[in-house]
Length: 474
Image (cartoon, rainbow, N blue to C red):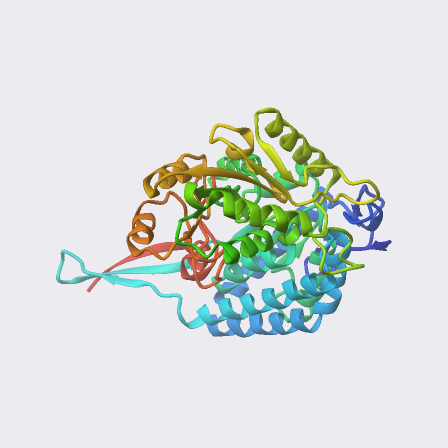
């Protein structure tokens, strides 16, 4: 068991005689780390020093901010083994996948460093010939970053990199389920020669997180999390009219047309659905198969789901790992049982394994209907309901008949169907003949209850700016 320390004002705090978070391995249920909960004094110090550091940071030429981000990226890459070891222990990922998350995060940071010379304003024509309108892009100030458990290193970098290149300071609250890896990454921040206090990373309980987010110095709150957490952030934002940026739940529909390659679809579905035990907002969550190919695709999926091994990835990285918490597994299994009671057919999985850890087998349900809970509500785990459709318009209507609109997937080679979906799907992303992977030069933004604002690319970076219009009389 390792004792980690919070990172505030450019240094690590001595462990205080305060309550601590016990971080448990989802593969064994054993405690692998402890982290002291930040006090009100710690949070106040983080905000005060970040405010001072941000002013100095924003005054630097943007290229110097970009160079600092490159140094930080180099440090993260150099420490990828240590970050990955902490992440694997607290998340149940394999060491290889956890290390890869850190490496990919470093690549993302280098991408955002390239925006240093590309944050542009505008010259707008005035109605007066002796006047010029100049629209400037400016930093917001301080950003509170609330990080989820499923990809805690990548998502942390996904938020702090654009915030920093735009000239902001950040205070980060990692998930209490996976805070250790973030505090190892904080060592890279300490060595990157950023202004002391520009980035603070602290473990907090919900009350402390509320104090952070409602502090008058916080100009923006960015969250990746559940709809429930998003509503809480909107309440926090009201206190000082802070800007919210929310990436929330998803229920990705996968529409498979008659001309799809069923072997490729089945293999891809299994991989996408069982990556990190299905704990991804964009993971396939409801499958719509055309009636003519439904039985053939279901047979392939049934065999694949039943054959997919699961277990401790520290022992065998080829296995699917665990869910993050015991409560999540219990809730997921209860949903599966309710689906079967409503008439769904259990084709694979659906049982609670014995032994340590919070494992759950890949689970496939056929005979599902659009009105079932398993189709209507987010399922953050390796469970896939299958439904039938008869024509493209029906599949589009079923895909859009939902509260979420994050990602969507279409398998067909018919260009008319592709363009129909491209113009009518009610989701922030449409993946054609592939599964979601969030290209970081794109824009990852949800419709409906899946969020406000977004991450990645130019538009994600600009979320961390505000505008000032200068009206210049000649």
